[in-house]
View 1 (spheres, rainbow, N blue to C red):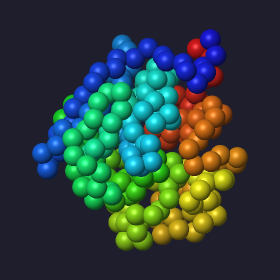
View 2: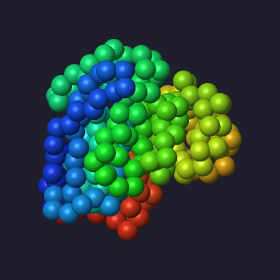
View 3: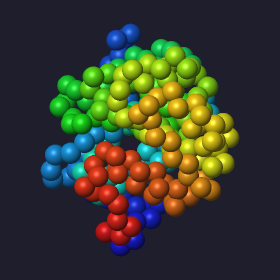
Amino acid sequence: MEIRAATVLPARREPIELHTADGLTLVGELAQPLDRPPVATLVTLHPLPTHGGFMDSHVYKKAANRLPALADLAVLRFNTRGTSSERGTSQGTFDGGEGERYDVAAALEYAEYHDLPHVWVVGWSFGTELTLKWAHDPLVEGAILLSPPLHRATEADLDSWAAFGRPLTALVPEFDDYLRPEEARARFARIPQAEVIGVDGAKHLWVGEPYVRIVLDEIVKRVNPAAWPLPTEV
């Protein structure tokens, strides 16, 4: 069977709640391999909720639909404060990336408490800003950024990640609305361990199955290289 946009492969999927240090309950889902423990974990941070971003944004939904089965990964998705999806609405209100520091911390605490292995953070658009600003946690083994705009993340945040020392990969669409590969390479040069990958033909939202496959392949290549490249059929 060819893996298509709507393909959902077997996994253990459970609704979860995250509890922030400032007293909010956030809703999410954890997807894990069906009959074996995960070898690594993706904590995903979604695009800007004021522009339609949420835990079901399509790249993350497809990651949860495929990667537990294809790459033995756990995929943790959740709605940041004030964000709604089919799973429900997280308490609180959007705070422009500041109060969301507690949301990031709550997701990482959940992963640690539940002994989820080898945690990598995957941020997309607004989620990349949260990653760069708030994911400097000893639990985090590395991060992957999809379409980083570098609006809220400052040079100081980039320098903090450089000092943090964990691997960082930025996937930058050729036709991104905010930051394109050449400028991204210049700005991320302050992080010695950063790798910038320009993706020909892609746009900010990674619309189209070929681009989703590129993103998921690049994630797996770094997080569980034994499962790379991902199959296109099952």
